[in-house]
Image 1 (cartoon, helix red, strand yellow):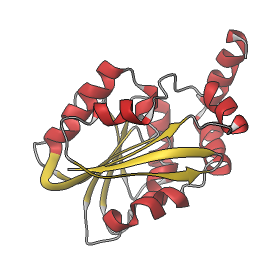
Image 2 (cartoon, one colour):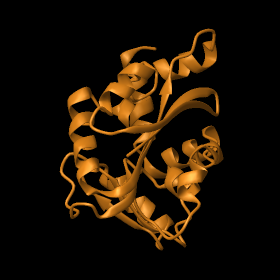
Image 3 (tube, one colour):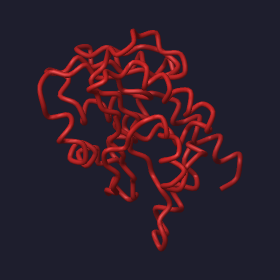
Image 4 (cartoon, one colour):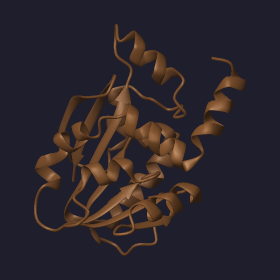
Amino acid sequence: MTEKAEQMISKILSIPAVFHLEQRLCNNYGNVKAEFSDYVDRGALRVLDVGCSTGTCGQALFDTTRHEYTGIDITERYIAYAQRKYPFSRYLVMDGRALTFDDQSFDVVSFVGVLHHMDDATATASLEQARRVLKKTGVLLVAEPVFSPNAVLSNLFLSIDRGKFIREAGHYEKLLDAFRIERRRYFKLSLHRFISFVAK
């Protein structure tokens, strides 16, 4: 794909309503919920969803009527859209590298389809902040796309994704060095193969 075409797609997807629709049509977020159900279908949790964009995934993954949900993103237009769309949840414009929350204040911190939009330095700094705000008994949930042998269509779409840092499984795991990985496995999200981690 040409650079001009990529810029045009990026510009179109920067419109919150368009991006929200694309997320709903192209991603089966029910699979993300199924992947992490053991960790999110319990009690009343304080949840931080890093890189929440327009809120589509977070609303599918977490029962926001039961949990105290906070979604953050650096894109103001996405956050404004999410807050209008889901007024019962809390959305804030915030950089993952500079969280303003108290230490050990969340039961769950999630990065779903976010780290592949960050270079290593940004990802590491954001994960350090996540570790700071995560309770000692809390869990970090991570799900990211990976290229797969023979998955031609998936690999094609991932190659033109706005996220330019799709990594191999071991590279994602290396980013989580400061955590203890409790579980690592793969699941399907729409066309794509995702790797998931649960860490403490």
